[in-house]
Amino acid sequence: MKLVVLGSGTSVPHPERTSAAFWLETSSGLVLLDCSADATHRMAQEKVDWPNLDVIWISHLHLDHCGGLASFLFGLKWAPQTEGRQKPLRIFGCQGTGNLVTTIDESNNYGLFEQRFPIELRGVSIEGEEFEMLPDLRAQTFSTPHTGESLAIRLTGKDGASVVYSSDTGYSEELASFAHGTDLLILECSFFRNKPTPKHLDLKEAMRLAQLAEPRVLVLTHLYPEWDGIDLESKAAELWPGTTIAAYDGLRLEIASR
Ligand SMILES: [Zn+2]
Ligand SMILES: [Zn+2]
Image 1 (cartoon, helix red, strand yellow):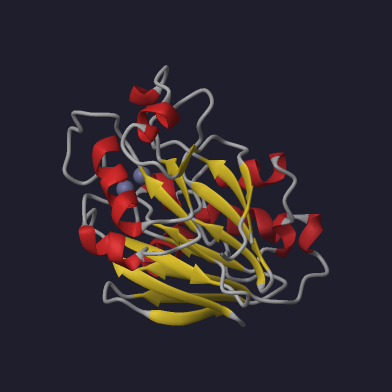
Image 2: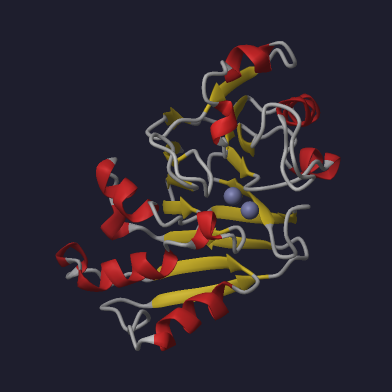
């Protein structure tokens, strides 16, 4: 699997970090993890194969994670690059995703679901679910302490390589169990210290979760501007001896199974 970080930031405007979106290339197909308002143009900037995207995952309804979904569908509808496309685009979204897109769609008769190819939208409940995201790409979800609908996801490919994306979350050791032994853990680390809310993680908590989950590679993301000027990777190394990478927009990683 191959990862391209499209957005390593939050909802707060930042000159270098756009809001949450992660491009994942698997042997089963192309996956977008979260679709922020910036994601559409970030995909083009990174020159990924967005006209052939197979699946969009929406972790929760905060707009820095889903604000680009309707506008991306609108863009696909008018893009010459999708003219010959026939395969469906699947959207797996947390509870409320369908309502959000449908409400926007109906507000101005955009016809977001009337595309040259089928749009298949499926809601995922807050109970832990297991489903085939694509043939040979298994997905498992975990309800995170962030919002009522927020979900972490674990994806396992044909070759056994796995990725866990926490999206936004508060501290939960169950999340570490859910992520245990994964090849890549994309974990939020909103704040360095003195986090203003229990619904996000600070560095100490993120590294405690890494210690418990023992991922092969840890990528820390969802970085608020409070991180500017702090060397995240060296601070992380003081707390956990494994491989920690500070996400940035444009980071590319190859993920093989152990
Ligand atoms: Zn967020
Ligand atoms: Zn959030």
